[in-house]
Length: 115
Image (cartoon, rainbow, N blue to C red; front, side):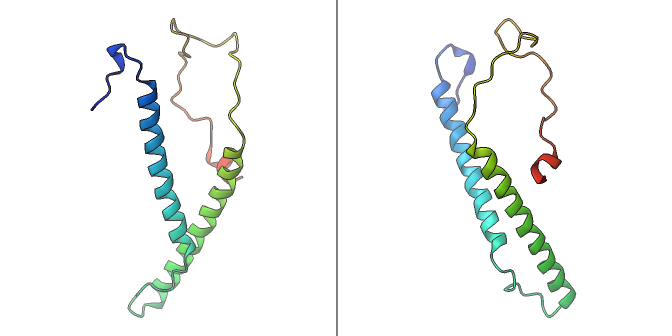
């Protein structure tokens, strides 16, 4: 049953539960993919094509490195508990108390993930 946010009912728990479930599914899929890259990729049948086998081996090695870096980075990030942030007086808030500034750009760069 779809949730109508504007119906005035307190559906926060339903919405949070739905988002939590989605994030769990996404996390499990990511874990499966990371585990797949950790397995030796020598079992691939390439029909005797040594260059293809070498390319697949190199790609798998690079993916293992990437997955390990992501695991290390996010393990550190997620261990830190979320802290309450005090609202700064210079924030541009709308009448509902929400930040009305443009949030279209991410604060996290690729360099932050791999540094």
